[in-house]
Amino acid sequence: MAEKKIQRLGILTGGGDCPGLNAVIRAVAKTAMNDYDASVIGIEDGFEGFVCGHMRELENRDVSGIVNLGGTILGTSNKGDPWHFPEEQADGKIGIVDASHHVVKNYKRWGLDALIAIGGDGTMNICSKLMGLGLNIVGVPKTIDNDLMATDYTFGFDTAVSVATEALDRLHTTASAHHRVMVTEVMGRYAGWIALTAGLAGGADIILIPEIPFSWESICRKVLERSTRGKRFSLVCVAEGAKCPDGGEVVKSFDVKRTDAKQLGGVGEFVARNITEKTELETRVTVLGHLLRGGSPTAFDRVLATKFGHLACKLAAEGQFGRMAALQGAEVVPVLIKDAIAKLKLVPPNHAMIVAARSLGTAFGDEA
Ligand code: F6P
Image 1 (cartoon, rainbow, N blue to C red):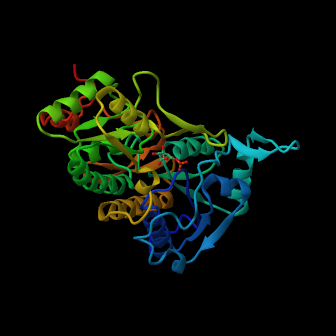
Image 2: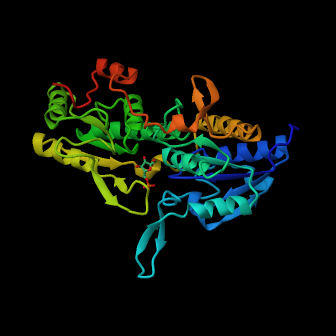
Image 3: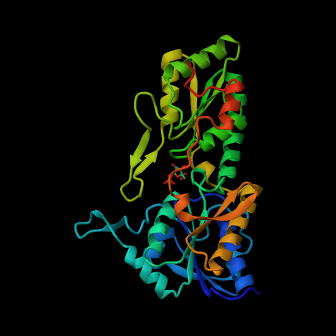
């Protein structure tokens, strides 16, 4: 048993869910219970639950047998930013208020020595502000988008890419059978990591990502060129955040309760419609959406999540707050949360995957 510096450790999962969250919860809780004889307090539904005081002590049996389980046993929410908290007003309308003092109150009420926050850039930004109010926090990076700085990978990304790749493989055969242009829209928010990686793995002919502006002429030329060469089908993998030549990202809806009000979605349909109008080729669209976030994590994500959770608990126990577990090369190391949120990690246009894909004939819609 290590020297006992923490007695009560809070844990929450914030933002959109992703495969591997339960593997982190398990690793944090088991390390805390086994190595530090500490109690673990689960906070339900992310910061929304923290503001409202929805918390419960976790037992060993709560975290047993969940390494392979998708979702999160704690629940999560992307509408609980304590500084942007939706609250019903006297007139029945939803107002946005600062509820951060409730978080501090509940942290103290439950006698927490530290909080492990598992989340993406939104969660880490909130953590950084809560540390300013005196909370001891250690972060664990999660998001299928892989857009968090200071870590090579977030857990959840590998699973999302595997699901998208399998979908592309399946779409490939039906595209070829019917001589169609199949457009597949994947998540990723403002970063193109999922589209690029799955597109490369699934042999997409065209990959459209937010970081590379595309033109209709360029993508239409590519599909027509393929069809005159006898390749009468094409696979297009488009990131939901790809920017259309005649506008910005395609936004499905706005929700003021979210920190980022924009809900992206619909670019696949837009791309397909333009290809059909401009080339007369037949197109079909598949939006993978939340399929990329659901279900069991891959072995890679389970192992990464477990290493992250173990390190995060150790950092909390050692009083190394303000840090986040990160993957750098083959090592899981602590980094400063402030370095992780300095800016979004976007795909560099000269990334090795892009260079290789271009050499293989994959188009990005910017070719002259
Ligand atoms: O950040 C993860 C993510 O899945 C993004 O890729 C996507 O834009 C967003 O969350 C969708 O959020 P929601 O679950 O609110 O639809």
